[in-house]
Length: 395
Image 1: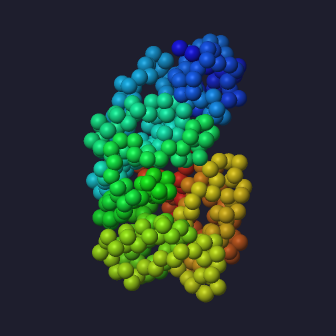
Image 2: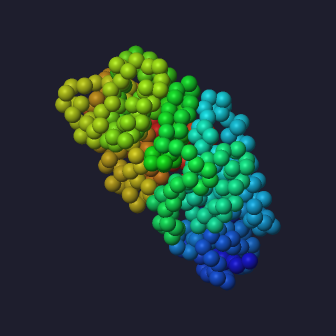
Image 3: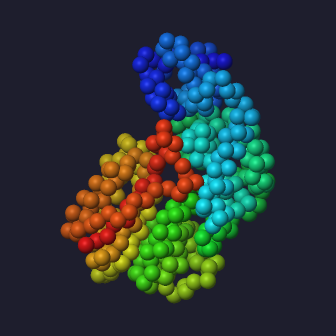
């Protein structure tokens, strides 16, 4: 087996079981490993530390498969890892309320670079790293066998593949059907998911329990759902008895799906209004019209994929939260989120706090939000905790 030798003193993160090895920690590669090939990771003194997938084009030069160097990285390894991931999801309470779940969450399930979401009888997969790409066919076969899903759609089109030296790939990897509108059920609400062209894998499964929380808070309230995408929070608020819901989104294709989602549920369609608009400008227009809301949801797209972009993202997060506080009636609630990996929870809270000060309002944090339980976070991989949110009350 080819090997990867670390520079002196650069094995500390591995001893804490962090699965990433950055280029600066590598002293040399022994042999000529190919992209995605399994290599033996050794300390500068030659001590075996882990088995990892080699990625010569990425700053993350290797991703650990196992810290047990006696393990064989072969088909049975992936069978076992996938079996354990699926077992965990069947035990979650959400499995009784929805047929759409994240089945594999990358490093937190011991499968670096692999994302698998299930939408009823369709799986959507993302192969995002050189190592998992090398085992693509094996993993597809195992997934088909263990889930019984004949249709597997691949959405390996995330930007991170470029950093791995991989070309994007989109289309059916196994089977086939019209996957532009996969019907799913979530806590009694019907949604149509566009797995072929929708954001991420088609739907924001990580916000499932947060949608339920908004549903529980919405009764009798005037609600604004900014960045509504396909209407997840908006329909949850309407199902929860909202007085009226305004949902804003810049993407017309997303709003087309949102309207279909509305029609697929027995709801009073007169109580919801979808607006195609740039949310930044739309918030100001609402302010100029003197509008006020009792509950505002801010779930914007990823402004900062990494820490280097956090400063610019902070300005965007502050702007939308500042305007939200100005649109919020006294005693009103703001559910605000960030899915940016480059903005940690503490930084996000400080941004929101600054927005409240600049808006001239008092605000209290009532609750904190995170991703649903089918998006677990391994204790040794804090990067997996990307979604954070706050529920605040305006004084």
